[in-house]
Amino acid sequence: MPLIIPATQGVLAVKISKITGYPLGYAQLERLPDGEKYVRVPVDVEGEDVIVVNSFAHRPDEMLLETIFLIETLKEYGVRSVTGVFPYFPYSRFERVIRGEAYPLRIVADLLRGTGIDRMIVVDFHVQGDLSSIFGFEVLNVTAMRKIARFVEKNFDMKDPLVVAPDERAVRWAKTVAEEIGSDYVYLRKMRIDAENVIVDSAPKAASGRDVLIVDDIISTGGTVVQAVKALKKVGCGRVYVACTHAILAGNALRKLLECGVEDMVATDTVLSPISHVSVADILSECIQQII
Ligand code: R5P
Image (cartoon, rainbow, N blue to C red):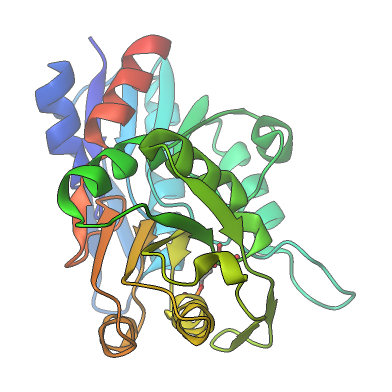
């Protein structure tokens, strides 16, 4: 039976272990007084299929490095395979590269591939396309959007809602949610100025008088949703609800969202937040059981 090892932000490992019945292992992961990482695998894992669970929100660099240390150590120990379960994966939004600018996703992919990792499972990864080619090992990308949609249907009091993607990238998620709740969807045009500021064009008249559900993969600073809400309110939409997979909620994002007039919000537990009402543990467990 595969062994599940949670890393520092691998809280989902407990739920996954309960659902799959796979045992929970342990790795010693310490932050030393000088900030360096100490990693030790204290149990015999030779010949085992090991699942490492970690989420990279809030402390992405530290979590990435400890994960790399841990996988390398497991491989040296002689495990049969390592599957990384990384519900939130960082650096996925840096796609455009101009000369002189680092391309972190490629660098991170190279580092992870270098550990000898066999495969990883991610949730609603921001980049579209063949992730296995980008990373150079097998990548399975599962979606939480159908489960989010079911939560929305049950818990948000919306009448004939219009699903809104706050930018073109989010269309695929808005479409999935709209299909699931039997609604229609539109998208807004967004231009990013910098990490905290975006401009969102005017919303379509179709939103006027309708309750709206904004659907995105990530809410980081909240800038995108706040601007989308403003644009939708300008055309006289009804109540505004928000759903996303990864609620990073950096800084005062949650306050900004509440203050701009959002009625209610939901996210998953890929990142733990006050709005993480939907768990992806069952989705990840099903995927794990299909491949290992
Ligand atoms: C980017 O295109 C993503 O899909 C999100 O729209 C973005 O990460 C949201 O970031 P923020 O909350 O900082 O505007």
